[in-house]
Length: 387
Image (cartoon, rainbow, N blue to C red; front, side):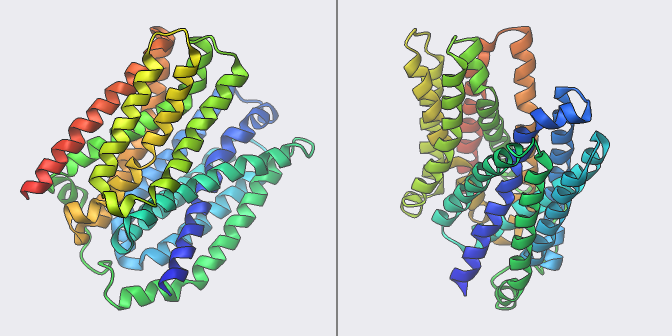
């Protein structure tokens, strides 16, 4: 039963990753059909992010009341319906409206599943769980690519993914007795009183982990979003080579999480965060080196991806140990919100710096958040050790 439920959770995380690459893949066709500026994709993305932040902050109350299984199933259904609505949209405004349930569903799934795995499974499963998110995020561009080849029919891509999501939803609803069995056996803390935001943030060390998580996500998403532009505009590397190596950064994260799963239980969450941060910083240094040998900078991007791989899963998995199982759902939800804030707002901030100063600031911007993450993470370790 435990293995079956774990397999279902893996499927749920593939489901969570599937929609994340769709908008970027389809937008070059969508914006022309809708007659809106190219930049309007950012508005939809911001609305989705806003929804994920809100539902992440609500996750503690929802999960304690309804259970992780039901929250995950209903939230997956919500995203499936939103995606189906995207496929039927023939103008821009409906996309903005549908982005609200899309974001609310995604945030609730993320927070509920991350905490559930942190509470009930070993560290290796958290690494593999996030690897499966990468699998879902990697599959959807191929689905959209196939759909666009059929008379530029982007709506078909959204419809295919929504149908897959509906199938995942059915599996999740069928599996609800497995989740309830764990709940009845006393393996969860869902029935205890939910913490308010003020109570959760006031717990010793929580502000530090929020700052560390914010810094990590700012680093990861800035690295991913601007890698190709940095290589082309600042390093004068041709666009095809730049795009290929920028995509390897994503692959490095996904493959790195798969490999980390084999050593996670032996190494431990704290050491994985330290090792991952050290590797990431080394990769950033390689990117920053003012050498004419482009292969060093390209290798640096891949190394950044491998370094990032264990950090996010390890921070999440260590939450019940650092702050107590009874507090973990509330704190995981706040961590998710902090992560979304970092990934949503910090990459555009770098874009403004690049426009007004220089694209050459790219590695130094990444280094700033890397150093901040190290400081906050180590201060957290000391705080938790004294508690």
